Amino acid sequence: MTEAELKKVLPGIPAQPGIYKYYDADKKLLYVGKAKHLRKRVSSYFTKTLQSYKTQELVRRIRSIEFTVVNSEQDAFFLENSLIKQFQPVFNIDLKDDKSYPFIVIKNEPFPRVFLTRKKINDGSTYLGPFTSVAKVRDLIDFIRQHIPIRNCKLNLAETQLKKGKYKVCLEYHLGNCKGPCERLQTEADYRDNLEQVKNILKGNLSPVIRHLKEEMKQFAADLNFEKAEINRKKIEHLENYRATSTVVNPKLGDADVISLVIHEEKAFLNYMMVQNGSIIQTENLQLESRLGENEKEILEFAVSYIRNRFESISPELIVPVEIELLDEQLKITVPKAGEKKKLLELSQKNAAIFFEEYKRKKALQLLDRKKENNLRILEQLQKDLHLPQLPLHIECFDNSNFQGSYPVSAMVCFKNGEPSKNDYRKFNIKTVQGINDFASMKEVVMRRYKRLTEEDEPLPQLVIIDGGKGQLSSAMESIKALQLENKMTVVGLAKNVEEIFFTGDQQSLKLDYNGESLRLIRSIRDEVHRFGITFHRAKRSKGTFKTELDTINGIGEATATLLLNTFKSVKNIRTASVEELTKVVGESKAMLVKKALEDAEI
Image 1 (cartoon, rainbow, N blue to C red):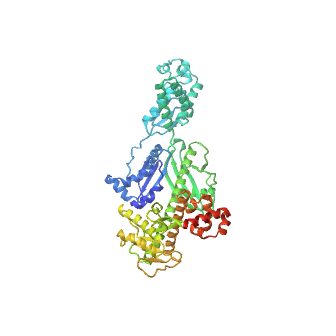
Image 2 (cartoon, rainbow, N blue to C red; image 1 turned 45 degrees about the horizontal axis):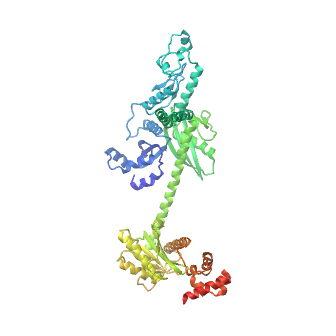
Image 3 (spheres, rainbow, N blue to C red; image 1 turned 90 degrees about the horizontal axis):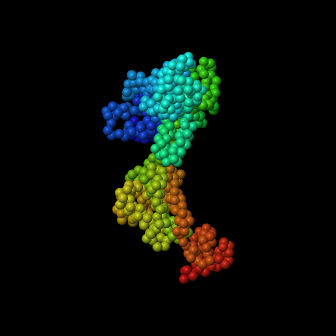
């Protein structure tokens, strides 16, 4: 995969935990990895400078990347482990030891014990996990024992044994960690209540426990017992960061297929997860065409048969978002409303949604690529029509404007690769020219623009368009020649209205095909510089930057001045208008004031 190909793929990789899969040109799975942040992890393979030979060889073979999003880094760990065992990719570590992970078991016995185990026995006990860290599991069990009195001895507390009365309470009872069920000092009902609290913690129902600890912490702080308050704060933090169950590995789930989808127009985007022995062993995204406007139920009914045949699934259960009807009566259809299966379906739906977003992103990139190709073709035609020595990938266009016949400003727009590059647009307040002088103004702004680019060693445009006739073009060329840039870029003038192209020194203008792509591009650039310049004018006017002779007339406010300028378009036109014409707009008294003031100003 080249750097350019990676740049196209990388934005579609979520900044979320999950697993990534690398494939070669033959779609052979090369490597499965886990990540807390998928996008950063995948990009690191292609940006590291100090890589082992094996990593370099892996990167050299990669031709496509797939990923699956999960809810936590822990789930990414389990899913990676499951997929490596299933597919044994050539670049992954060979997992031959079949390592098992720890569970917390609530033993099926009178006054059940709670302890850590790696062995699962089908004896009716409740197993929670698996967990990635033995140390964390031990910490969790210690935490539970510190707050909930449950026994940790191995005594047989069956009713027949208790009746014999041969057990005595141990040190744990005297420390307050056990209520002494061995001497019948605690009833089974009371013990079950304590056990429910344990189950709440292990299943992630932590709100009641955290609420209790926070109340204690506040009381400790109020009593100035800051050491105990700090201990409670750490306990709360520990509980809030604790995740009791794994979405991707849960022994209760058994074998099942999970299918979810997103429908958009005539396409359906499906995510499929194969679960065996409570572990996700395979994930796939598929796209189907919906030709007849089938609904979600109809698409799922077709997809289930297709997917189960394709992946040779014999799972007895199917988890889907809506009820469907299948001919296979042996297959159990589950539409979960809550619990572990609901979480698994939500994970599948999350991946289907990401798959759909990736499809939209790729379509947008394809449209962008086609637009770039089209722009390139137009620029090549423009180069040919104007006989340019270079392809005009960078074009700049200048336009002078004045505000109602006064106070000139200029604007410059920049097009790169045939598209507006708005970060490169520039506005100019005319600094060295007195009055209205389009030629001198153009000379000034062209000098300022390209002197700065030269001093900052910035790239120059291949084509500069001056919106105006021969006079403005000649003035712009004076600055270009003064900067010794005449052989480094082509400067042309665009005559207003007739849309003729002028070159320096040519007597005859160049007339391009009016409906041709070259002139359409030039017109769009010219229209954009007009729009940008007018916006600049309006912004300056709204800030009160411009003032006209009308603003200095006593008795004529801003609203009246604006009304006159909007009607007559310029101060010059107002000056030549008759009193009768002015009266129709602002009334006789104001018309007389304006007429007299403007006539006095000419003396």
